Amino acid sequence: MVQGDVEKDAGARQLAIRLLDRGAADRVLVAPDWRERLDQLTQGLAMTEDLLLLFLPEGVPEQEESLRGFARHAAEIRGRSAELAAALDFPGERAPAEVWPKTRVRVIDGEPRMLGGPLTWRDESTGLIWVRVCGGTFFMGSPDEEIKYIDEYAEQWASIRNQKKEEVKGEVGKLIADERPRHAVLVEDFWITRNELTLAQVPDDPGKEPGGSGALPRTEIDWEQSRLVCKRLPVPDDPGGKWKKPDLSSEAQWEYAARAGSATRWSFGDDPGQLGDFAWFEGNAGGEVQPVGKKRPNGLCLADMHGNVWEWTQDCFREDVYASRIGPPVLDPLLDPKDCKNRVVRGGSFAGPPFFLRSAARGFGTPDDRLDLLGLRCVRSRVRQLDPLTP
Image (cartoon, rainbow, N blue to C red; front, side):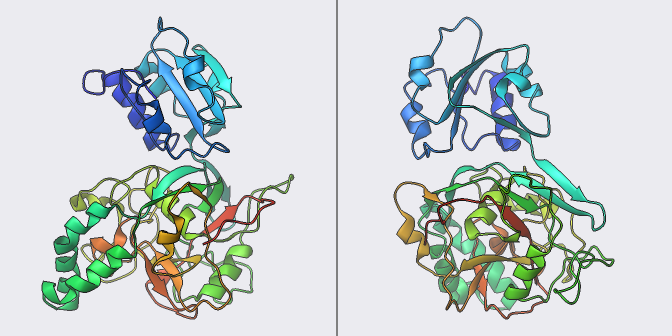
């Protein structure tokens, strides 16, 4: 929370934008009447993980009682908003007092940690880059208002399929329905590969060590092979055994990473006119897959989350799975039955319209699909004593 007027206080607005862009916050409230709106801001927070920070100008009375009990970790920071925003440029995680050593910082609950910028690790032999994503709560799926774009999406899809808009409108409406209802999800920290895995990092025989050349994404690889490739990737040292072996992401992890703190259709906003800056799709790829990492990354420094190739996830595809998650935030949901016929794919491809590249868009493929527009990206999740909640 930032005490200030978002319309008049440029410093407060800048601080809010930096917190969101760096992934340090899922939600930011900038308001002079933040006390009255605290319940609204913290609705859906999971007490086990979330962080609540209050940024105040000097001279305002202490607010300890106003914040206590709303989140596991809470702190009060005082100073000029523009100066506080400028300090949010550091790698990895730090305590607020380390971020702002010359600023008055008061811890109210827990042990707050700030995310300044994604922590990364690079394997020099393969060029593979892992990015650590700070966990948090987000709203997964599309809002009910998404249906207002159905004509826009149907026109995109009809153009590619050489059909009339009315002929595909029902199909598009069904795809949007699969993304609803929007629901609260809590994900724990995880590592994710910055790019889609490439030909240089994935051998033709997934049982062999990676190595080779080529910046094009590795495609024509099925679901089981993709999981095997992930498990064999080089990873950062883990002396405490806190992290699992790499694997495909869950659908929730994928969308959390793709959104990078956003709640819009794409990570950069709602304007499809900007899509070409961030993604390869049917409007600019020339019908061919493109080298990874050539477009602008999202707020977590992840490239090609929109477009280039679809990406496998662990989850089994079920049309109505979101309806079973209404209520309090679900912790790291994963749907992974043994008899799954279709697995979720995410992100869209070089051959697809903007509709399929949205952060909430869901696709699926049979586990043995080997397609030239389907690749992979891997994650490394935290070790937990309790299994993920399902579905």
